[in-house]
Image 1 (cartoon, one colour):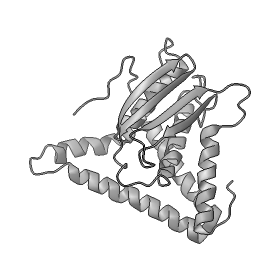
Image 2 (cartoon, rainbow, N blue to C red; image 1 turned 90 degrees about the vertical axis):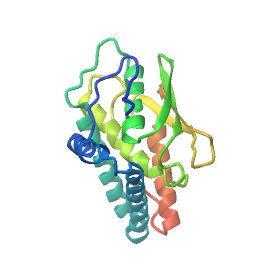
Image 3 (cartoon, rainbow, N blue to C red; image 1 turned 180 degrees about the vertical axis):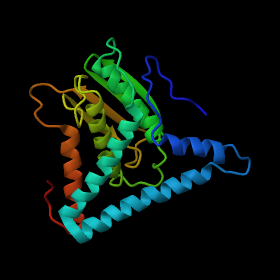
Length: 227
């Protein structure tokens, strides 16, 4: 199995470590176990989450949607806590370098994707997702579910490393946005994260998440606002 490796890697921990250990010991070690069944199992759960969210939005409106979003963010926080336990940030790494490494861990481990990271300068970094397990299953709108988990992951990072500039929930101090996605027809998913300038009052990531949530409520026949 290919390990997570990048120059200056931080020693992140595997979330759900005991379950991962048992998987390797009791399933992946067997000659009669097809790892592709894990993919089917994962897709089943991913689609189930999306369908549950849509059903709750249709039946319960904004309040139900908010409950689902809060639950997904808690999952992200849990994964961050388990991944970051005991990890120390070297003083020689900049916020951009740390953020890029953390995003690579999220992409390669939490999302089982293949990515190509880029440090664009002292104030920005980006990454391209070359393959995502959900790319043949998700619609462009379905990807919003993952945004909520990521918001929990970034909040968990902020709780673990409050001393890292720009590490607060939603990457406060930075802005983040996608430029293209595979489910929308692009060859890759491309995301950019840059240090927010004083004139940029809006959190672009959070604002777009809210926009998607409001659009989903309108589509489901619920209320248009979101707290």
